[in-house]
Image (tube, rainbow, N blue to C red; front, top):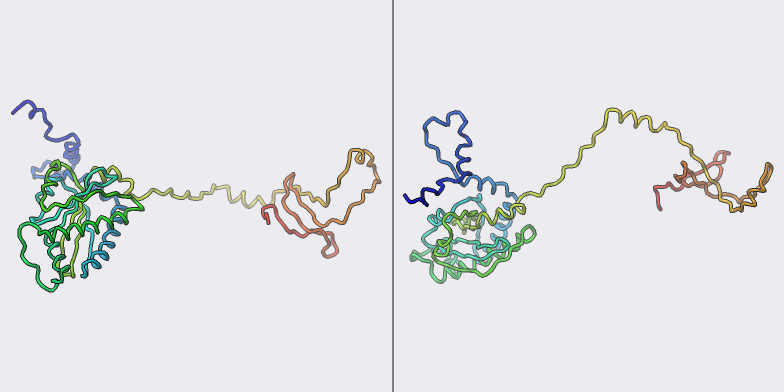
Length: 323
């Protein structure tokens, strides 16, 4: 074994911590073999992206109508649970006949991949050219040029619907489409690259179902996970009352205040005031309004007159009423 190989860590510190996390549980050392899912952390993260799930459901609903109209056949689209896998694992699961569409996507700053199974394309070609009532023919190992063109058409519909549905929550910009009938482009990705796998189950005429998978590098999604999680809303503060507040509320109406009324306003000079003495009479006009004050604050305005033989005031406006 070379020195370089000897120095390489077989497991990262995070993986070691994950393995020993449950070592203290009863029965852990019973000698039984236990497999550990190293993708569990990513799966847990994706399970929290509830807003992403809502976007995908709306995306599927839009595709259902668009594809049914375009190919003249009843098509249903359902989104399955988001999964996690590495590039090398996913590559081994690729169907033999496929159409792989890759496109640079912003703001992910990486390529997004759409994997279409050849059997779906065969069925769509059959319906598109009027052979829907006939069984799909046996096809060669690679998709045909007609199927490739249908695959490109499906991908354009897929990405257009995705762009429109996601625009309010997470705007996307797609670049050029790279259409491949082999997995060669995907096989160039690092084997350990983690990807989020979004499976769309497409049923044609409720007879046959096909699995279309959208593959997005996990790190690119995780970098924007705030956009896919519910927005935190501040909980309203509960109104709390102290033990003595009811007593205060009961006592407040009985608090005494000095309220004064003002019938009119006189314009006078200092000379006039100095000449005033006991018995001086000042003529005033008949008041039409009375204004009430509490200290220096005006609290109400009313009409001045008589009621039941007494001088009285009728409220016509309070300070809160600006009309």
